[in-house]
Image 1 (cartoon, helix red, strand yellow):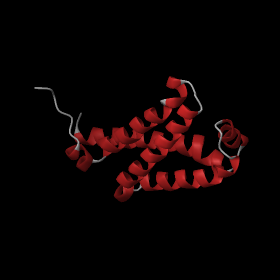
Image 2 (cartoon, helix red, strand yellow):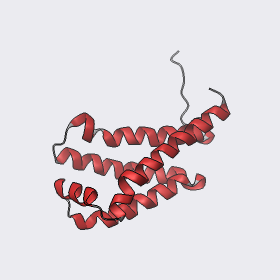
Image 3 (tube, one colour):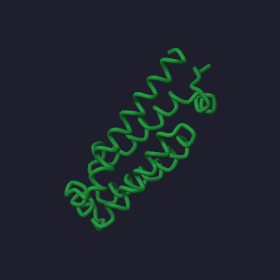
Image 4 (tube, helix red, strand yellow):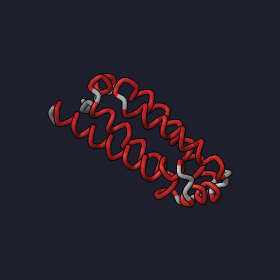
Length: 130
């Protein structure tokens, strides 16, 4: 894949990740929609934490979308996704649809960043086995 194609593929993947996070996670929490508060309650969290978690997610998302801070945003988001995964494990949720969902999001997030950031590709190159 050419350099320009990689960058645009990464931008699209990052954009899809950002749209999903904004629409499915951040907005419901910031708006304190029942989908967010009921889910938190079902996982054993106080629904009052929805706003705080939504603000943290929004902050990570903004950092991820700004090219100069995108790696910091991805690192912080990785911690957040790890906490979400731990919560799903503690709640004994289904493996592939709930527990590993954070892993799927992490792959999309880091994959998009890797594709759109030449410096990250240089730091973590894909190589053929010799």
